[in-house]
Image 1 (cartoon, rainbow, N blue to C red):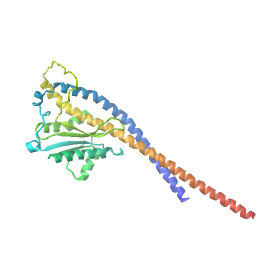
Image 2 (spheres, helix red, strand yellow; image 1 turned 45 degrees about the vertical axis):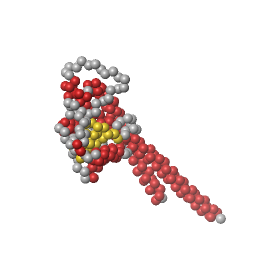
Image 3 (tube, helix red, strand yellow; image 1 turned 90 degrees about the vertical axis):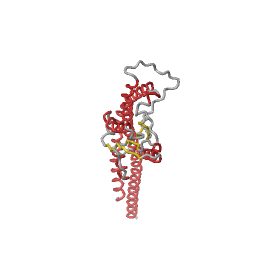
Image 4 (cartoon, rainbow, N blue to C red; image 1 turned 90 degrees about the horizontal axis):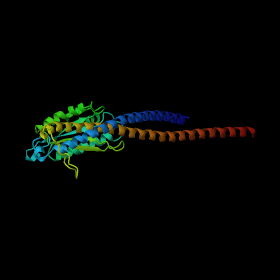
Length: 294
């Protein structure tokens, strides 16, 4: 009887857990749909912006813009600091989502430090901030109010100080570590270099567009390059948000399925014990009746 009560308690516990994970799966699915729409809405604008910059940039113009200039290495008098921006989520229960992003950021930071740079870490998201605080690492910046509902204003707030520092020659590079959203099941941690801006390569076989420019290309690039940097940051925020919901949906679906398998096993075990107890009672009754007749 004691074992049966314990099994019934475990069945109730697993049933309640499955209800919670199923609800979280449905919530993540709903949020994922909206996040996917934001990702798809940002891509045409980003591609158009890349195309315009590719048409405008020439080797002669590139020398006149700090955001396009490649700094010299530290050994030759270049900047000794580099920045890494890490995007993580504010909540867990998303499988290895945050752990993979942190691992990618540490890999990138190690590579920069081996190259002779002092790394300024800018952590965005509670999981990344908490991890590096636990390690005792000093962070150049941290934000906990961005990754849940990213907006273009958030991208501006994050990037403006870094753009200014790079233009002044204080930073050698700015790298962004984020989750690239390929599909809800494929969200690899990715590192992209935001600064210096690498002009998009012209497509093979494509004819260079012959624009009549008013104002001239230099004035247009002066406005478009910071816009391009901020847009790259915004895309990283949006894709990481969508990837988080995809990872959480996958993790909660797996947890719900596992809870169902555990419930099936517990119910079979409970039914077998119950049948064994009933069989034993019947045998005792039959034995008692036979003894009375004998």
